[in-house]
Amino acid sequence: MKGVVFNVLEEMVIEQCGMLAWNEILESQALEGIYTAGESYPDSDLFGLVDCISKQTGIPAETLVGAFGERLFKGLADRNPMFIDAESTLKGFLKSVHDVIHIEVRKLYENPNLPDFEYEDGADDTLLMRYRSPRKLCILAEGLIRGAASHYDTQITIDHPVCMHKGSDHCDLIVKFL
Ligand code: HEM
Image 1 (cartoon, rainbow, N blue to C red):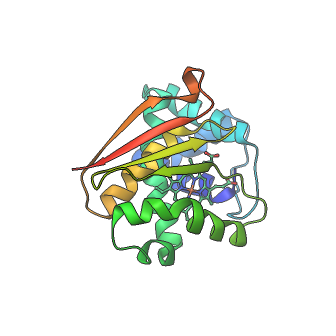
Image 2: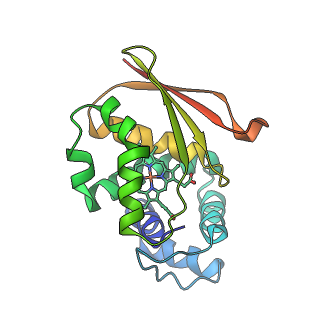
């Protein structure tokens, strides 16, 4: 996982729990905590940090990953406003993630680990995003989508009827625009 993801996690923990809490979490994981945005770090470090934050706060890991996804959207959008400004609607933006934004991410960062999205744009008020990734971070994807919805000031619901964590080879995220 790229250092930028750790940078945003650090921002979130410091905002919510303070610097002391972040330093304690790093110490308990025997991590130095110096993350360069464009460098890659083991996914297991990120999952270890999430588990530790979950134990310390009593917030279930899944809830935490979803909340982190929302905060991560803001962190990525603040750092790369040009990607978000290019689209005027949430649906247009979500449809640009696979073929525009994550393609640009490949130019910005060396060998990023990105998911695969396929889209079905059935009706005006829904968009199916079919997610595939060996990292199975569908809950993070849901959080990122919610973060985007709040940026575009658009109300949505997300249904997740098919999931890699329930034995499928993909996740279906059905975004409904209210
Ligand atoms: C709603 C919008 C977005 C969704 C649903 C989304 C989805 C994801 C997911 C689920 C991952 C985790 C990796 C995986 O699942 O395999 C990821 C990674 C990433 N995304 Fe996106 N993304 C969105 C917007 C953006 C934006 C706006 C940027 C801007 C630069 C961005 C840059 C990245 C980067 C840098 C990574 C980490 C790559 C790595 O660690 O190697 N994403 N994205």
